[in-house]
Length: 252
Image (cartoon, rainbow, N blue to C red; front, side, top):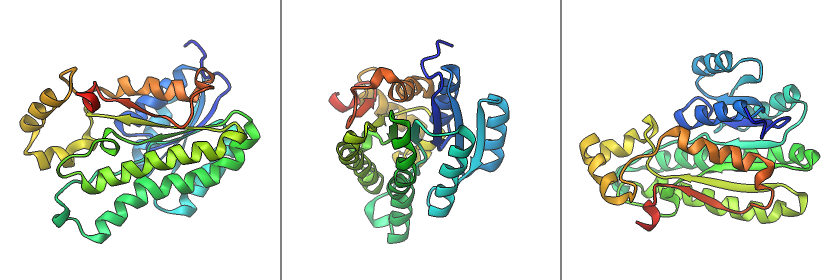
């Protein structure tokens, strides 16, 4: 531990998935205290127990405003304040536009976009008190560069990028920074719907090899350092950014 996040008080959603769990591990290793929120109660409690006394689990359904408000308030109570809100919960759905109905589209936006708006609204008063707040939103390469089968998902992540940029400008006078992380292909179960749409793992591997200059998928531990950087005072002059971690795919 180098203590880059010593005394930082962090709430993170989507904390038990591959990228979220790697981010929590990195936060704790750098000295932060972390409240982890997720809809998966069993895995959340298991993760909190494994991480030890610096971590507490609070169940949350980010699509439900009351649940999300409870996460923020319970987290602030336990942490004694709030310095960082990492909004990592997300939903992946894929398929042609003709296979999507309005309910599926609305559910995607409820989790990927609306939840970030609500989470920020509840967290901002506490971040103002800290005087050094940071909001980290998880977007995606798909929000900058879509593809077949990703119409709804890419639209939701594009909205996250626009939300991040605009909120950063609004909150700059309050010394609250807002940035987004945009992972490309990362080796997680989260991507299974688009892998299935592409025709399975072999077809997906061929696509990754062709589109990613580094020639491979990323790993969750390669995304986690961006969470640490954006949570830390090292990024004190970084705001309104959507940072790609995509192996060069956007420019490939």
